[in-house]
Image 1 (cartoon, helix red, strand yellow):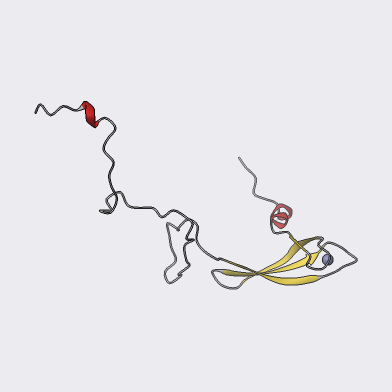
Image 2 (spheres, protein in one colour; image 1 turned 120 degrees about the horizontal axis):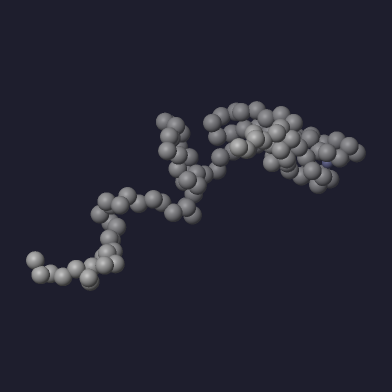
Length: 107
Ligand SMILES: [Zn+2]
């Protein structure tokens, strides 16, 4: 059974680079603003730099639609993702079964 990620592992996933010295920067605080926007407060790991800043993390588009979509939340679906097409869609051509030739019309 897998262990839940440690706080340090989660922090490593949210690492970035300092805009001034390019050292690794870690998220120190995170504020949930809306369903699609979080604010992240970064701190540079370079003691001689000492820079800290606020960044924004937002949902740009949906790659795979949710099975439980939130009502009223309209996030565009990425134009590059293939859209699922219902099997009974009249616009979908149904290919003949691979064994159609084996069936005889003797009935
Ligand atoms: Zn820095």
